[in-house]
Length: 178
Image 1 (cartoon, rainbow, N blue to C red):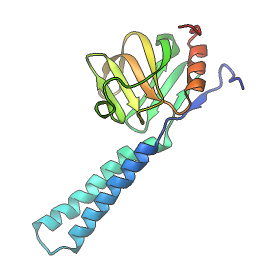
Image 2 (cartoon, rainbow, N blue to C red):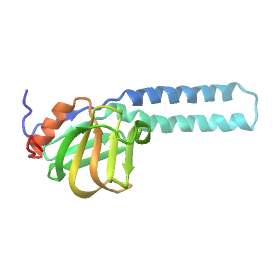
Image 3 (spheres, one colour):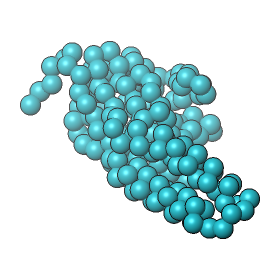
Image 4 (cartoon, rainbow, N blue to C red):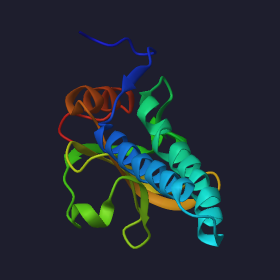
């Protein structure tokens, strides 16, 4: 099935780690709140009764929205979105190469979410440690809203690599051999 040139294509990414982290952290927060509620009156009880719901809300705000978002290959650019962690559009004119990749630094150093490495000028937008695609840009570009970073390549987690790569190569006018 061919995608029309101007039709946006939804690019999903694996979301299982966000779901697992959300469930684990929220279970710990509920347990902390319950133990504080059921303990004797004292300063620690008050502290945990205030801290645990506050931390629970923070985890809720940063771990749940990525479950409901996705990347989008639009007509003029590739929109990278992962909850509130990142929301930016990369024009196809900036993209010089798209290829499948793997993590060379170790999965734990990259982690999940959005991570920037200033030495290699690489932005990692990952939600798993497999199915990674690298978008190489034509030079340094400032990406970000609050914390602007100079980026030369972007590494993304993608659920279905062939459709994403074919669409980006077609819309960025890249040859198959590049």
